[in-house]
Amino acid sequence: MADLQITTRHPLRHSFGLLDLAVYLRRFWQRRDLLMHMTVRHLRGQYKQSILGYAWAFVNPLSQIVILSFVFSTILRIAVPEEVPYPLFMFVGLLPWIFFSSAISSATDSVVNASSLVTKVYFPREILPTAAVLTKLVELSFGLMILIVLMLYYGHPPEATSVWLPLLFFIHLVFTLGLSYPLAALNLYFHDVRFLVGVVLLLWFYLTPIIYPVSLVPEKYEIIFDLNPNALFVNAYRRVLLYGESPGIEKVLLGALIAAVTFFVGYYLFKKMERGFADRI
Image (cartoon, rainbow, N blue to C red; front, side):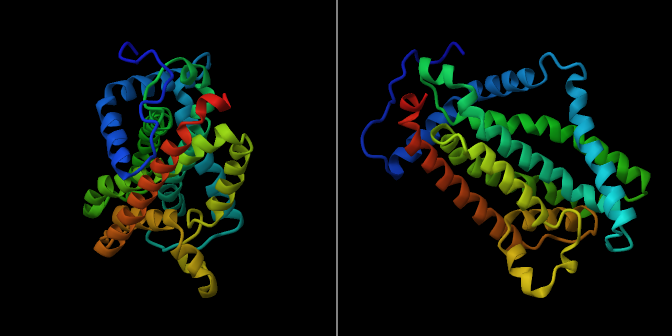
């Protein structure tokens, strides 16, 4: 934290445009060491004074897969392709959703929770929601361990097309960051945002084909899923990991376009609202 400038003055006070956006992004990249420091700090603080500590990163996805698998495969009996066991089918969609939803929730509160730091020193404020999102990568890695165990248990090793996963997840990560920035800023202006985010995430969960395949969706409602970026990502994960299919270049390009637009628009809105942070704290 030694490289923080001890000032609360915003470095650029003139009208904000695309050139300023490039300047901010460059300065953000230059502070990547601070970003890593804040990510580690956020991670340690998250499990501080917790009896189970990092074990919670296992407990959360494990409990969800047990409960959801029992309800939707035993009680409601959701039909999925026969070659893939339901718990495996469901968890491949649930794991990235857990990352996405927990990252959005954590990032939304990131600026409010660091209000004392924001008013004392100047640093790129976007580091706060970014660090909150990156913290969830650690929890995702624990979830991946559970997924590997499931695949070994069911005798369903990853397909060769799994080489697409890093690119697909990077696009998903950029999309998540793009949503996190304006939500973190808006939550400082309107504290109702954190509650609204919880409601929207709950609705979004059921509108994303996580616990059911898209084939069960009535044709007249398919437009909802076509417009849902998370449905695009979840289907791509399943295709490359479970079915040995390519995600399709056109789908990858579409996802990349959605992620890029979301990121730059979200970042732009964050920097526009950032100037009023000190007055709102």
